[in-house]
Image 1 (tube, each protein chain N blue to C red):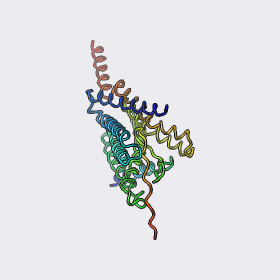
Image 2: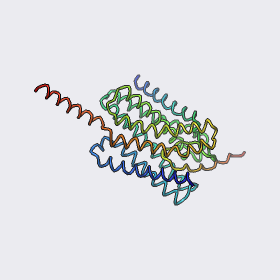
Image 3: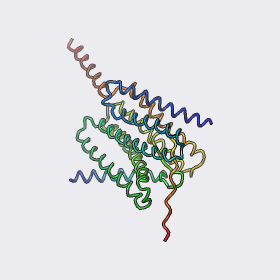
Image 4: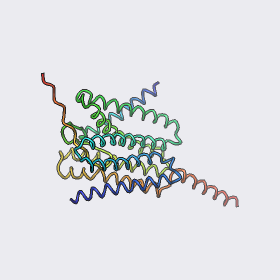
Length: 57
Length: 245
């Protein structure tokens, strides 16, 4: 049980490190703009669809 | 015009090398041990051909290309993750205790990546949730493969692995993943200047080409662990025979 918890915490650390690295290098997609993305292969990335309209009250 | 020719040249060069490597690995006697490499190369080749067809038929801004691009991107990152897992398995071939720990760790990592990717967009884009989840998941899994590959390289150094071929294959994957990430960081630091943008345009196919060349060298020229072990055993037998004489 203790090993399981430790493994889970280590996995969480790895994943949070990955997400942090991604945020640090600016890899955040934004709808409607040219996204900052990394991809496998060298094919051109298609443009994103426009963002959804905000609901008006 | 020149950049277009260079881009097409890179694309066709990658397709040719991928096809040649697939044929070589499929016909070799060690294809079972290189199953991950064969799977990943097949995914790369099928993706490149399908995207090229969709791009020529429907255009960059079409819905068909958009769908195909993100679906194949999903397949590519999943196959890359499987490849890294199989490399971990090959690296821990004689370390069963370590492999049990690593296997559980990889399962947790995959589940956590899926969970975090779902959380980050569930509040913002409800009607396009599926698409943005796929994009977010692909990007997170890409960086996860990058970090895991680096950890695997460090692990191979730590256990002093005799499998030189695996070391080179891991280095090839490192080129494929680290190059685009480093270019993205450069674009971010230079706030998207023209030079960085044009560099990013060529980096991804160049990194794929670099990985394929390293893999071609590793598969064709560098013996795997089994070959090395056999040759050492042969040498030992020869030395024993000489000593007995």
